Image 1 (cartoon, rainbow, N blue to C red):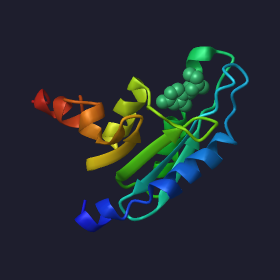
Image 2: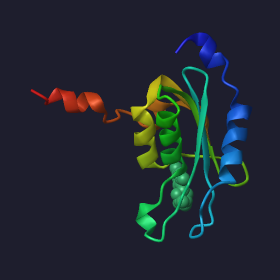
Image 3: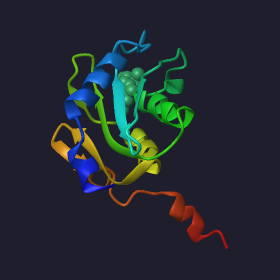
Image 4: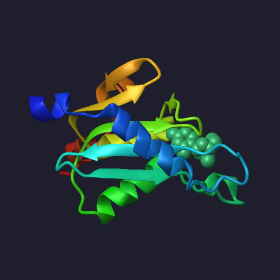
Amino acid sequence: MSDSHMTDIDWDQLRGVATDATKKAYVPYSKYPVGAAALVSDGRIVAGCNVENAGYGVTLCAECGLISDLAMSGGGRLVAFVCVNADGEVIMPCGRCRQLLSEHALPGMLLETVSGIRTMDEVLPDAFGPRDLDATAS
Ligand code: THU
């Protein structure tokens, strides 16, 4: 990530996109809408909302929709990420979604968190990843 990309991150805009996404959430069970938004390395913004299911464990977190949006709109690496509740307040991505995000993060990816701007590495240290699979491939 170039330095200019780092400093160009418009967190207000990303939070706004995430807050808009909460309005699309399908949450008949928890009644807890979540919206997620991320900046991609080529400048695009991708987003997602949570989609629940009568089989509760089948629920898709907002981050799942965001990663699908990333793939469907051309792929690439995530540079900056935020997720919010229905009031537009920043919340933390759940543990599973940290793993999901980490696979698609540009090294140094930033997240707006409840304790300020943090790197992916800070919120998921020593992450398991594709390189671990390579290590035993032969
Ligand atoms: N949820 C997300 O969408 N992302 C997270 O990172 C945390 C939890 C959703 C799942 C469920 O629909 C609702 O929040 C309550 O757990």
